[in-house]
Length: 105
Image 1: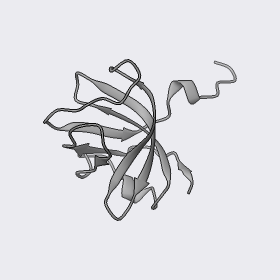
Image 2 (image 1 turned 90 degrees about the vertical axis):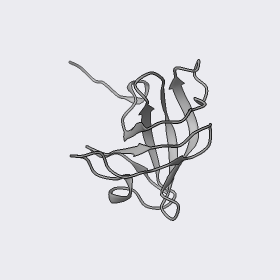
Image 3 (image 1 turned 90 degrees about the horizontal axis):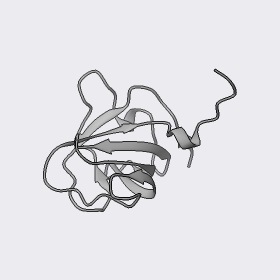
Image 4 (image 1 turned 135 degrees about the vertical axis):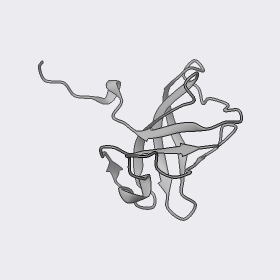
C-alpha cells in the first residue's frame, strides 16, 4: 500500500449515500485512478457535484474500481462525509492544502 500522488486524474461517479465511490471512467482529457494506483493504495481525493464537496484520504480497490472513504478531511457537510444524492459528480486526485509542505514563495 502506497500513497499515490499524480497529475491529471479525474473520473465521474454516480455514487449515492455515504459509502465507497464507484468510479465511472475518466473525464475527457484526464486519466483514470486505475492508471496510477494499485489495489489498496491510498489517494487524496476531492469530489464535487458543483454544489457540495468532500476532500479526503481514500483507499483504492482495483477489483471493484472503487475508492473507500478512509478519512474525510473537509467537506460541505461540516467536515463529515457528504450523503450524496442522485446525479453525476467529478472525483479527482488532489493534494490537500492542509497536507502541503510549503518552504517559501
